[in-house]
Amino acid sequence: QTDPAKAVITLQPPWVNVFQEENVNLWCEGPHLPGNTSTQWFLNGTAIQTLTPRHRIAAASVNDNGEYRCQTGFSVPSDPVQLEVHRDWLLLQVSSRVITEGEPLTLRCHGWNNKLVYNVLFYQNGKVLKYFIQNSEFTILKTNLSHNGIYHCSGMGKQRFESAGVPITVKGLQIQTPVWFHVLFYLAVGMLFLVDTIFHVIIYKELPRKKKWNLEISLDSGHEKRVNSYPSKERYLEE
Image 1 (cartoon, rainbow, N blue to C red):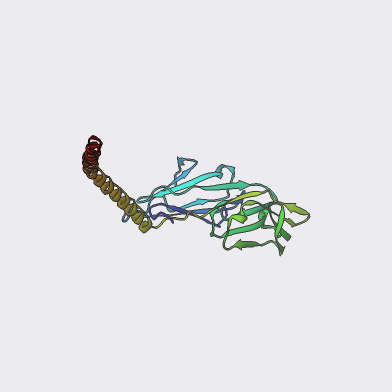
Image 2 (tube, helix red, strand yellow):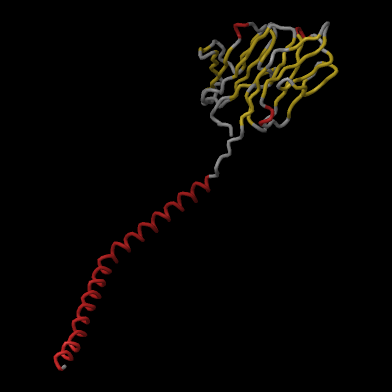
């Protein structure tokens, strides 16, 4: 579940890896103070000058590489977004490198300077995943743990190009235990403790009584033995 007090960064275009000279917009969404939309942006832990909900990167360069966070007036800092700026002929762009099971993942095989790329192949862990006649993008609508791996693409321009690999991590869902389960669990533990306490109190109270009862039985048994022995003694004397 998303923390409503945490700011969230979205990218436009939605890729976390871009070519040099391309433009990127980062948007920060989060609760603001009334009448105050100021936003604090951070790059690699250092505050940057942008104080608006949008941080614009025009003609991206290697200096724009890094981990971005943002924070609004009433929010806690956002999760980091790692932006990578590349210089190559072909780039596999991804919407996110780390996603949670069930979330979508979009991939795009992107040519330098928006050049057309044909006969595009997408790969996962070295195996062909998808084929397109012309450069395109596709979305895995509902990811699962089998989508973990290294992705790359290849395609034809003036010659055949191949992108670098991009690691994708799909995290398993964390099943949250309902509140009522915790309530029932602690009630059950409390009842067991109560029953155990009552049981020990009863035993503690009954123990002296039981000892006294056993002593009385022992004394009574000894008296009967003495009484029963007298007739035999008299009989012996008569003989």
